[in-house]
Image (cartoon, helix red, strand yellow):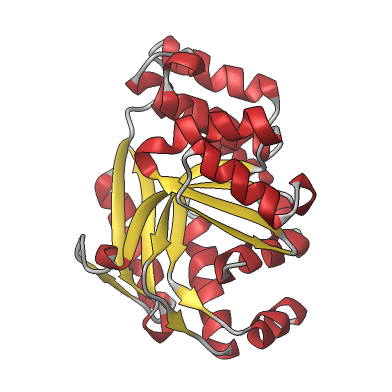
Length: 249
């Protein structure tokens, strides 16, 4: 599996998601509300909202919270959020993309820039690292969803581009514009996915040692702790030995 998947598993085992559950639900609600405001409040008629709801369910967000977020949009409630992408370099020269939703661009820009600086990084201009990533659809399934060949055949039939299978599960990649159709086809064949979302997939990576990984985690943790930040993506690469040490630390 890709280094990013291993990192996500480490965070999960350390209980980080549990500690940040309230903050996580808040960010998921924001995405649902924005998606519902931008289109139809019916997930079946609004692909972005459908993906937002699916992501929320995969994070065990209560049904009432999901419905409340949709109703807020339908009733014209809540702030009008602006979507902004920040790009920069973290410790060790790792490329970092920060996706945010904010009702105050100046506040968010100042906070993100300060976090980069305090963590040994450098916030750059839009496009400064974006060329190192491709916008893709990412669908994940647990290992017990099937063996590598079964998942590969299902993915090909569904119109996916690539599959990464390992002991932690399966990651299926597709074109960003095909995510809704591919995920729907896979659900019919394999059942509900663990997650379905749009991501920035690195086309080139930067190798980090243990110290570099620990520094990078501090940066990412600080960014994700910002209420305006929805998602952080990096292009780090680390050996299995370093990832094992990171898990133990």
